[in-house]
Amino acid sequence: MTKRDWVMRSTVAVMLSTSLLMGGQVGVVAAKTQDSKQSEVANIATSLIGKDYEYKAKGPKQFGSAELATYAYKQVGISIGSTISSLYKTGTKVSEKSVTPGDLVFFASSGSGSPTFMGIYIGSDQFVYSSKGEDEVVVKTYSEYTDKFVGARRVIESNSSENTPSKPEKPASTVADQVIKNGEKYMGTNYKYGSSSSTTKTFDCSSFTQRVFKEAGITLPRDSRQQSTVGKSVSKSNLQKGDLIFMKASVNSTSDRITHVAIYAGDGKILHTYGSPGVTYSKYDGTNWEKRTVKIKRVI
Image 1: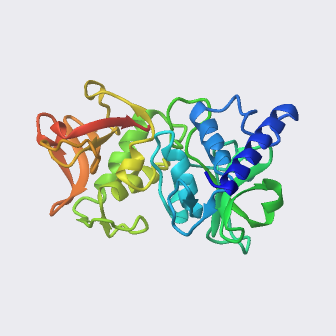
Image 2: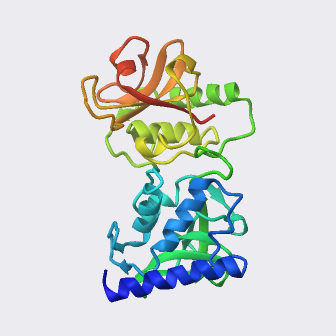
Image 3: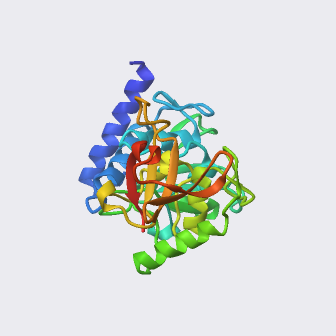
């Protein structure tokens, strides 16, 4: 351990101790009502104060702006994006005054438009971020950045064992029908790997699910692996219309790495996009699609 690392770790320890004595100035210890993972993310972010800034560095000794959040969430088993633009769309939007420890907070140097830097809110009016200007991970007073604030996102819902996406206040069956209807209007649309989430001229599997759920009022992360971290896990025997089905590369694959996502459409069918057919219905029950299934999530 370098002398600098020893000094910074000692500083963090003093800050945390002081928070206990003075009502939580750093904010993490006081977050007793939050989901345990949400609070853990805030604690991890605090522990990284003093680490070096390095553009695009993924840790554990150096961090870029977005990569600090990616790393902190990875430590609690949650995969999120690795760029400011992708993280700015993940999870659920929360207002500036409603942030809680573990939320992602975004700022723009000009005070408007797309975010140019971001951090993790840790409570007690403080957030942690990897600063290019200061060349290290720092803690700042949140209220002092009001004129630069452009948004906040909650990856983990409070008081919930699983991350739940935003959803409209409608009966689940009605929302599921709407999701399927949204998907059907894109039948035959060409498949394109890595298709932009801003276009409906082409889709890949996860931009398709993100789009049709968004049109039904439900916000999902961008890629299939991120989408698999939200919602409630269900079994194949409990499949319902609108459930998301996540699959590995092939039946014989030894890895359960998720490479595809589809929407269960009921009656043993899935609605998804791949290869030459583009957006299409496929039979699910008893097929290789079913045999490739890794997990199923309910987000409605």
